[in-house]
Amino acid sequence: MGNSKQLFSTINHLLKPRVPSLNGINEERCNDFMASFKTKTDLIRTNLTGNTNPPMQTSNTQLKVSKPLKCFPEVTQQKVEDIIRKMRSSTCALDPFPTALVKAHIPAIGPMITKVINQSLQAGHVPVSLKTVIIRPLLKKTTLDPDVLSNYRPISNLPFLSKVLEKVVATHLQDHLKYNNLFEKFQSGFRPAHSTETALVRVTNDLLMTADSGSPSLLILLDLSAAFDTIDHGILLDRLKHIGLTDAAFAWFQSYLTGRTEYISIGSAKSQSYALTYGVPQGSVLGPILFTLYMLPLGQIINQHGIPFHCYADDIQLYIRIDTTSSCTAASFPSSSTSILADCLDEIKAWMESNFLQLNGAKTEVMLIGTPHQIQSSPIASVTVSGHTTPLTTTVTNLGIKLDQQLNFESHIKHLCKISFYHLRNIAKLRPTLTVSDAEKLVHAFVSSRLDYCNALFIGLPNKSLQRLQYIQNSAARILKRVRKHEHITPVLQSLHWLPVSVRIEYKVSLLAYQCIHGNAPPYLKELLTPQTSSRSLRSANSNRLLLPRTKLSTMGDRAFCSAAPRLWNALPDELRAPQSIDSFKKGLKTFLFRRTYHS
Image 1 (cartoon, rainbow, N blue to C red):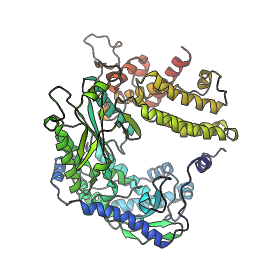
Image 2 (spheres, rainbow, N blue to C red):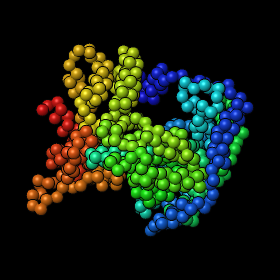
Image 3 (cartoon, one colour):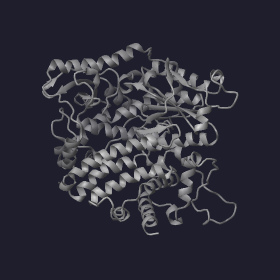
Image 4 (cartoon, rainbow, N blue to C red):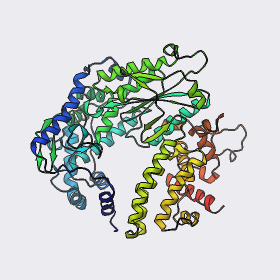
């Protein structure tokens, strides 16, 4: 089993829950699916008070564009071929050739594709054949009733050439946004060097430091209903004007958004074709970027209220310090500092309604975060969002991570253990038929990747918590190397060149620190770290060291990125802290940690 694609296809077939088949569906059923999807978005827009000139929209005029984007530069054949090689080999039913065939004959097909793309860019026109979307219904959960249409979500499938064209345009658009500094600082979705991890590192840093200073925070996770599907094309085009798109570049996006069609396709059955008059196609390259541009004024609104926030695409979270002094009681809550939050939420709701976005108060989550004493002292029991009173909860899922009130990640670790051992049991059954290489691929895909996801958040957790994660890694190593349960695990981990879980966490935090100092980390992380300076001319003593902030609580402030990162960074050898390429730093850091772990 040397073929990775074949390996994972087989494993998915064996391990994943069976999804009810949609084969045998007729045209009438396809039309029912399409009607169900369209009715949902139509109802949302009908229920909103959207208009094409909402008051909040005028704030966009404050954007300063030093260099407008009038046209897209001509793309080279080499650039197009590089894009094609890096893209997934998924094929759409609208494609004249399988994507794998295109990739296999890039030198022959590349010139034709490049010509089509450049003609589109120069003319400010998107070919009609590239504006059709095929939709396939996907059951949201395997446990749901497959006969209920509302239990499905629409999955878009676009022509391969349209994705290549969009990738070219997306690159130019990103460059324009970066050059003119038009990004929302606290929007981490679909941006280079930004991720769910960097977003959560910043949010948890602020929450931990607030608790360290003596106050709890209120975390609010807002939920939007079908946000990508309801945005208004007229408002979106206005956003593009405000960020400096003119002439052929603006005309290209006008063409891209108009004349789009979609239909359901299941097997040989198809629904009627419908015009896509609002929303951005999910599954497209440009859709997520356009959505973040659509949301630009929201950051300005929240900033006016002085409330910290963070966005990842349509995932929006706000957090505010809560006054727990004796003068703040449940009765005085509306007049306390947190009344600012109520005003902000009302303004967010009004802006969203005027921009055809529905804030779902019923699915909004609210949680107090702090020490046990701080939480107990808080007078708040609920928050009203979009007319819906939401009681406080004790756990929330935030960008794939389960957060609890003390940010000790107990719920998340419990979930990690459950899902990891489920996969390990299945891999163990297959292990006798797998090579070491294939078994290791499975372990990394189904287990190690989960242990490493956002693991920078786990810095400073108590040993009892980290030991539960280490037990997962130990079990994975035993299955991989076929070692008995009672044999010593350290030599096994060393032979696999695996750093223990706690050291992998140190590695991640140190890497983020490097990116803040020498790399291209998000500005919102860079500003958390301060270089150490000295009045004395001892350059080597303070070479590339970081200032360590004062904290009070080992369970709170010491775990914040602004505190943990300097401690780990300053403990590295001088040669590692020196400027170097990121690849050299990664290699040197792993070597240093590996030797410290296994040879000290």
